[in-house]
Image (tube, rainbow, N blue to C red; front, side, top):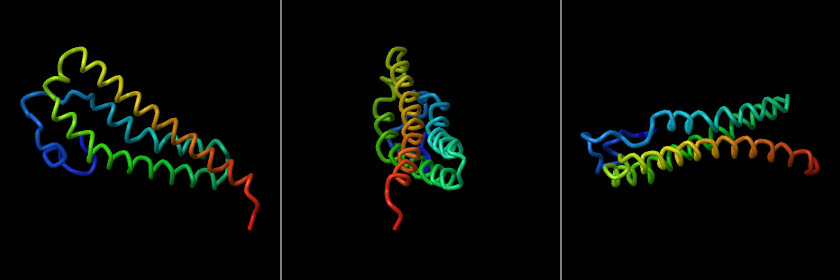
Length: 125
């Protein structure tokens, strides 16, 4: 499922008669995961700088992932849509989609903490 454009624009090979092989919840987690993960990491630092950097990093990662999904991923899934709707490829594809969503969430949290750790290491100008 595309984030910024319609499915017909991102995946022109899309077959409307065959169900989309990726579960919709994977897209929700991929969209909300980095934003919430980075914001939570920033809030856990108990500083306004942490919260602001968490929201910024989470938003950047969410928008970058949405662009990547629209530009590359949806057209590949549409190309192999019939093949991916068989039981085993469907299972593997959904495991990969949820793994990608969890990895994005973890990366957003770690990027927030890494940015805040660098602020303590670097000398003030």
